[in-house]
Length: 299
Ligand code: FE
Ligand code: FE
Ligand code: ZN
Image 1 (cartoon, rainbow, N blue to C red):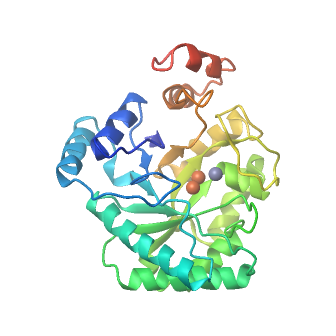
Image 2 (image 1 turned 90 degrees about the vertical axis):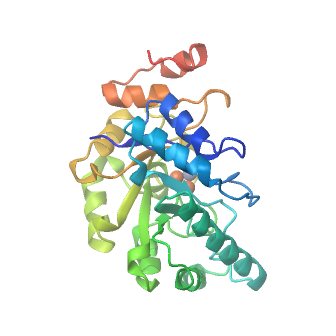
C-alpha cells in the first residue's frame, strides 16, 4: 500500500488534531509536522488530550500513525562547534525528542548541519559528539533521521559517504536512521534517472534498513546545482515519471513518502491534487492552474 502524505501545519490551538485534519483534507494516510514554526525554536507544551484525540481520528480514518514524521527546526546546527551555539542546539534537540515522544511519534528528521567554515571533518565530529551526548540522556524510542542535503553552502550530508560517517560514529545504532530527499540528492548530483544505482549505492554504504522516510519533491534546478529549491511534482528538473518510479519502487513500499512541494502562488497548498495525481499515475500539465481555481476538490 502506498504510504503518502505531506508537510502539514501544527498550530498552538488545534495541536495534533489540526494536523491530522489537514492531512485528511489532502487524502493522505500519513503526514509530517513541526512541533512549532520551522524557522524558530518557540515551542509550547504538547497537549495530551489533543494527542489522544488525534490518534482516535487517525484510527477512524485508517491513517498510518506509526509512520508519521516530525521535522526538527532548521536552526538546530550540531555541526557548528562554537560552544554556545552547540550547547543551544543540543539542549533544543533534547527537548524536541521529548516533544516527539509526547506526541507518541517515532521519527524525527534532522538536517545534519552546516560546518560554517570549520571544515567537513570538524563538522562531522561535532554532529557525532552532539548526537551521542543527546542520545545518552534520552531513553525514548524516537529515531533521529539524518536528511540527505543538497550541499548548499557548507551543509553536511551532501552525499551518502558523509551520512555514513556520521551514522558510524553514533553509539546507539537503533536510534539513528536516514531520510532521503529527492530534490536534495538531485541537487547534490545524484542521477535519479538511474535510481536503482542510487539505491544500490545507499544500500552498500549505509544499508537500506536505515532508510525510514522519503521526501518527495521535484527540483527547480539542474542535477548537481547545490541549490535546494523544491518544485511541484512533475514541474521541475526531475520529472513526473522519475518521481513515480521512486514512489512506487518495490523496495520502498513500507517507507512513508512526504511531499514538501511549494504552495501555488504561495497561497494554495498543492497536496490534495498532487497526491491524487500520483495515485492516478498520470501527469496533469494543468495541475497548478487547477489548484488555483479549485484548491480543495480532487478533480
Ligand atoms: Fe528537511
Ligand atoms: Fe526535505
Ligand atoms: Zn529542501
